[in-house]
Image 1 (cartoon, helix red, strand yellow):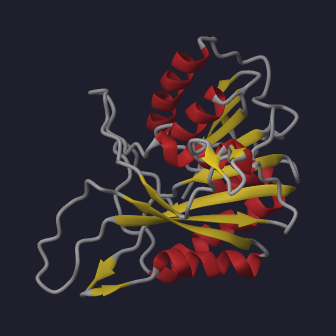
Image 2: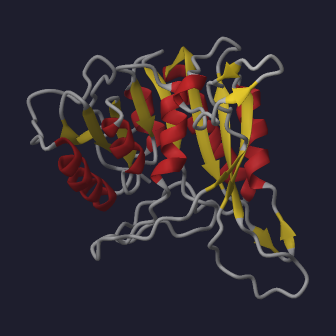
Length: 290
């Protein structure tokens, strides 16, 4: 059980805020309709995400149904804090038990639909370098899923920001040269899992490219990007590099300290304790969890 303050600010600047606590509790302190885009990868079911903490957190539930409901509780708060034109990108992996896949990603996706989220896309993240499977009766898994949820059919989307490079000029039937604007990306992304380049990094780092495309497409200029399971800080780092504001939440103080170091490397600005991070977005509360 979480016994710390609902919100404890680990880092605060005009562009970025890192908040310590359970995502389900911290999100309740945020204003309605205040976030443009959420990109996150929660702890996997029955998977060890990081070291150093003993806090009970999402991913350690006894049953899949409990895990799905825990993520649904986060999704419900995300729905409230997301702007009507906003997006929610959720990266999930499945789990095989007793020679049967549990179908976790789609079970979570359907739970999000019950909340009100609309499934805009299911993206397959293909990992060309993967852990080989020693099983004799099933194929080696080499992908994860990334769901794109929106609140409305008119959600913000900048396709031009993510188009593939245009093809060489093409001659038409009448000799007219056409220059296409570039292709629309498919829903299969081949991205390599990033290895840690820091000996101090004990945390999983997912590809910056997996975060960059969603942020470019669904967060407008000067918008705010949220990651309620910020982990090693990839979402926040990419958001700042793309000149967006960033909010990161995590139950692990160790993760947030590592993320803080990455943020300082990107921004080159010292943290300040005089202001709440993104105080137009976050209602900072120091009440105990009841």
